[in-house]
Amino acid sequence: MARPPKDGVLYFSLDVDFFSDDKVRLLKAEFGAKGITILIALLCEIYRDHGYYKVWDNDTCLLMADAVGCGVGPENITQVVHGCLRRSLFNKEVFQMFGVLTSAGIQRRFLRGVSTREQIQIFEEYWLLDLDNRKDVPASILNKLVFQSINSEKTPQNLKKTPVSLQNNSQ
Image (cartoon, rainbow, N blue to C red):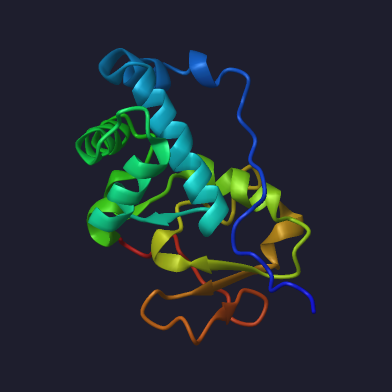
């Protein structure tokens, strides 16, 4: 029997200039190597589970601290998450509204990682990319996007059949 399709991805790209990025360097300056370890662990969780977001709550924080180990406690995880939000490594508005960790960069990498899928399920409330910008959403992927609301997971909207304008959506 075939396995059900995954929401997430099996791997993600880590740019060779990751450690040279000012946001990452500032995070390291503030939290040390543990901050970078936590950030990479967070990215792995995001890409593995849903591919482009992670619902963040106290239990998730505890599980992350357990997974990271190395003397990292939940308070360290929380501090680094807030540092990532301050440095725009994660989108602050989406986090404040929905308790979700994501970013435009994460979403771009996710789309490229799942470009061969027939459909790509997206929660419109978490969406940060510009559908009209081909650097954000390549034309080959555009018709594969299926937007749905977090309030109505059972009623997805296929972009081919129901165009959704997210530019006018004030979130």
